[in-house]
Image (cartoon, rainbow, N blue to C red; front, side):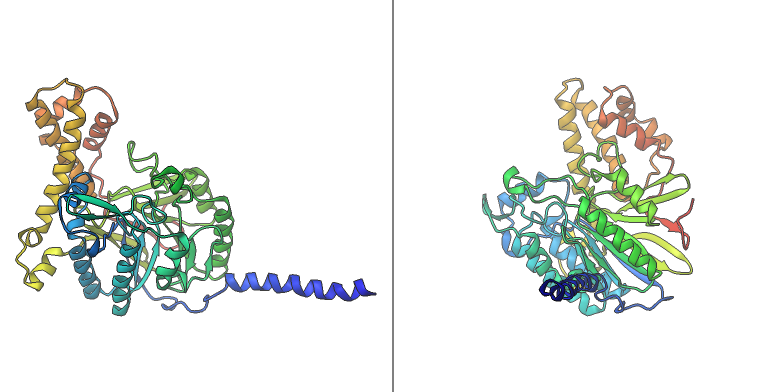
Length: 450
């Protein structure tokens, strides 16, 4: 008799746990800010690499850090963010998505300072949603700069990340993945965001460096299936957002950039009619698609907002019209003129930022070629200039590079006869890219174009 009395209690406990888990799934599900049928405008930014004002004195150590990079404008990142906030205030998008690498190297004070900036953006009326990148969490490289020296500063844990950025997705999520910082958000009744944490930061301390490559964990895959079923039951279309790329964007920018289990995730997305992924990480503006038996899926990698040409995406979603993606560049010069600042670099920021990025590319490829001792100084210069020209257009998202002028140039002719390696193959691929424009994408309503 005692056993029989305990059975109903046991069932009650089991049911309590079951319904509690269901409540987590359906949390905030009826609180979408934008009603069904209304057009939604998203701004999409990536790879800000924000560094807090108090972590640098613009001294020698900081300049050396900047010069060792790929052209990131960290010395002007606060001005870039101020100008970006002005663009947002002017255009008033419904949503701002930031797809990872929010900070330079995961510095705690940088995260806190950036979160304060995002609060000001939300006051404009734009909802902000963020996910981490490979730079953001448990990063052993977290540094400040003073004079000739770097010094170690605190990074943050995954729990601290969700707390600092609680107002920007985590607190209003419909559902959160138990194993990562992934979450499901519903800014609109018609389109939901599958915000995926693809970074791997658990072993950073043991490695002594931030792990670059990404993946979607097995437990997260189960959660994606559950989230997709929920979205389907509510008639909402899902857009996936991740830091790492879903598809290969470049022969050399692939390993460590495309998620390790890309093939499985593409099949999963196609199974649940997720036609579009928004990513970053490669610091280049690029759109790739894959078509498997009529199921086309797109991966839009938005360029880094910290690198020339300071691009961000503008995505308009309409239940009736579909998805229309384009790009803009942050209007740093317009913001500078409005502020009346005398800084010559800021007043001519597009030219300045382009020169910095081009000089980095030129120096990198020339030093690589010089190791072979196969070219004269003049030949190295010609090859470096050709490489720089092609890759600046690549950063811009334009592929109109196969012009007779470039193909007939002495620098390109040297590349034609160069040793076959990844750099040479990329040059040939870029110059035959057939004028692709990676700044525009249209996906009709419903299923993506076949």
